Amino acid sequence: MLGDNLIKLRKKQGMSQQEVADILQVSRQTISNWELNQGAPTIDKATELARLYHISLDDLVGLEVVSTNRKKESLLLKNLIGKVCKLDCKEVDLLLDSPIKEQFLILDINNQWVKVKYERKKMTKKKEEVIKLIDIDDINGFEVVGETNE
Image 1 (spheres, one colour):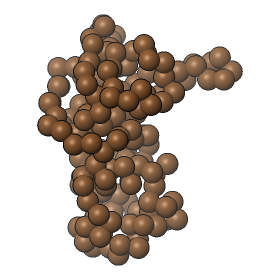
Image 2 (cartoon, helix red, strand yellow):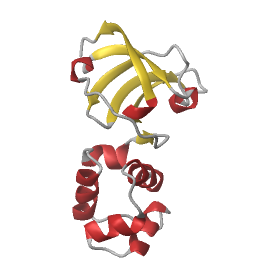
Image 3 (cartoon, rainbow, N blue to C red):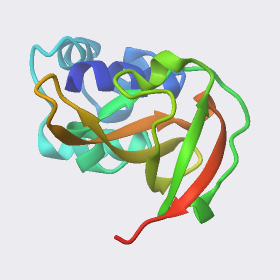
Image 4 (cartoon, rainbow, N blue to C red):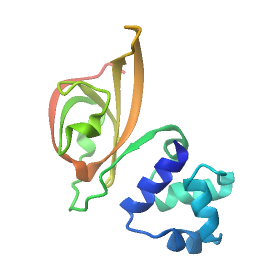
């Protein structure tokens, strides 16, 4: 999962493995190994990666990143934090395991990412909480459907 996230985050920035390696002062092969899950960055390099990709260290290692790597001018929508919304995504596949009508709690937004939380039913019919980062460029719009009590 970390390797897949590193690839998506790097591509979203439009950077090559060599460019990331140069910034972090490691070899291109090191970046490749991390992206192939054949090793992991040290905490100091992970911190640099999180800063480079404009996300928190927790988000770098703990969340699934959803992105088609398309570019467009993004809007900063901080007033949606804490709101329950329906998302209109360019591709339904981006929501992956959630129904189209799913409602998402917006946890955080910056000019590149929307951090959302929602519940999904597992095969056992139990519900589990899911938190994801979604590329803001892949969201067409938000429909606010409520507030959270959290």
